[in-house]
Length: 280
Ligand code: DHB
Ligand code: FE
Image (cartoon, rainbow, N blue to C red; front, side, top):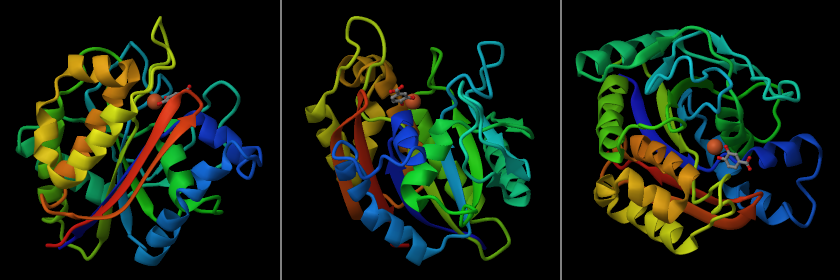
């Protein structure tokens, strides 16, 4: 059977893509941020996963207010980089794994998670920035990617508790897939940030660091955080953190923390990052 071996949490700030794509990653402002991912790039290059399930959110690129799926699973052969207003990023096309994706759809839907199956979907910075941070600038992404898009844009997003349980269903789905694929799950977005309104620019490092501590050692306690608490403490876009709980729910409760990085600022955002490996 396929095996879910590890999880990666990381922010997805679009300015990171702009820095990388425009050759600015060595500038004093950006250098500490990219340095924080050097360990991670080596870790994933050594691990060589076959497939990454990439939990992320679309920012009105593939979807709009016309259609708002809560959980949308990418089952296509490939996913092109989205045009977010200045042309698509010049990064490789994302190659999927339709067999495993359809198996996850079947298993999770039969487990009563009513996800949306998507066969055509451009992917925006929510998905491509985590890939760039973890893989740099390769000609082809070094693994297949199954995009799992979560609505954290338009109220009501799913609860953290729902995300946690969905992660468990994903683990069950992966580990009932006949094959020998080694699968890593990414939970992306966050940490604290607010891009609009009177509190624009909000960063709450106390909340973020506490979240990281509990994410590693006491993750189930995070499922009790309600939407309003995320918005109050982590800003309106801090709600993206519920996506991390899908990743964490898919791992062992006692998964081993391998690496942690926290950095402020990147554009208007606090950047958080953690790698955990399953023990079982
Ligand atoms: C920005 C956009 C995002 O989607 C995000 O998660 C963080 C920051 C931005 O425009 O700076
Ligand atoms: Fe975002």
